[in-house]
Image (cartoon, rainbow, N blue to C red; front, side, top):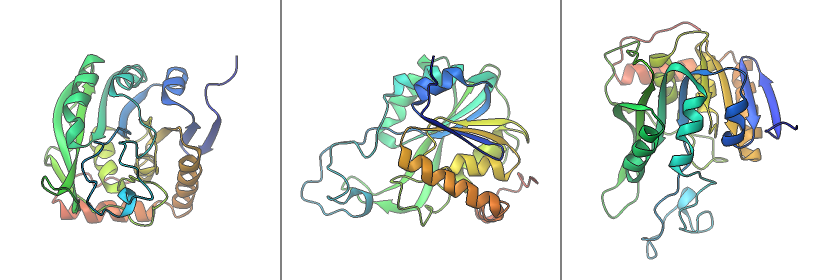
Length: 261
């Protein structure tokens, strides 16, 4: 029987799989202590025929069909993610305002429970005729016995600018955002899983603060570029990742979570 992934790379304490999470997660050799992921989902199609939008939504990049990248229905994510976690684990899943209810229903249906709805304030807004969109949302879920966050003073909303220099991915997430959830819901040495690696923010946030990581990505281009990004950060000793976290932690008035790697 052949492997269920196309490629496997190991970079320090991070193992990366090129493949479909539905195939890879069931055969992982170790279950995760924590999941932090920006799941791909279909966008709302139509509705701006007469508007001019730029960046990833420019006409040459996006056909307004709802498919900015290869996505997966919510109900196909919850089960594999639940089974890939240890008996007691936290799960953070990002989505936009249109998907909060469907995502929550799907993950509850997979026997995960809902702690809270968190948000990321991106600072800049995406154009919309029905209020400009400057926030994304994070389902804060748990499996088994609920664990308290390591620092109880963090607020639901976390303010952090979008990352720069990552134009090769349509929806890169800032490493300080992922670092918040990694530092809140895991301990050094724990295993952090991201079934939809994308640009690699969860991996960088995990490795920079002494966690281990398992990443899965289905797109080969994103996989290769994320691997290169992780390798570059490792050569730098993750100094920039930690500096970015310290800056955003101070901006959000988070007094705890000052952890050494």
